[in-house]
Image (cartoon, rainbow, N blue to C red):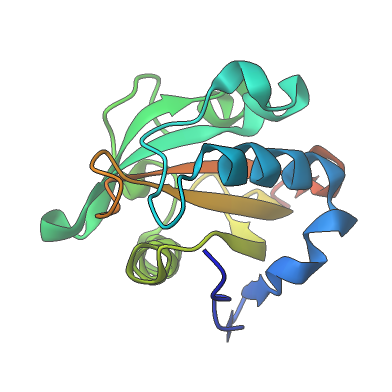
Length: 168
């Protein structure tokens, strides 16, 4: 697990070097839990939620990867995420959170993470379906039920980085 995701900037989405993870202490703690769960080149099937910092839980999502559908299924969404989604239950995809443009940006980043089998640290800025502008730094960690093929993701936000501007 030593390769680095390529740095990309797509409008309001900027990949950050994973080497900068220590600037985000809560995300760095999550990353260390993921690293400890990796077995050599084998990705973990899941992360023990009890080991990640509790302050990440409201901002955390567990996603099932559905490449054939070009989407993900939300398995679990923290309370903050759920309050800002357009639905109140799990099992929905990216379009429950994002417009088509932003859903495509998010999905493309997930494809890169799955292909590289490497975490992604990025800064995001987007407008939700309800018109509010959100900005944050997030970490996505790939998971693999069989240890090799990415089947899901652990996604969370550095709480101190979250900025929300209500719709005008």
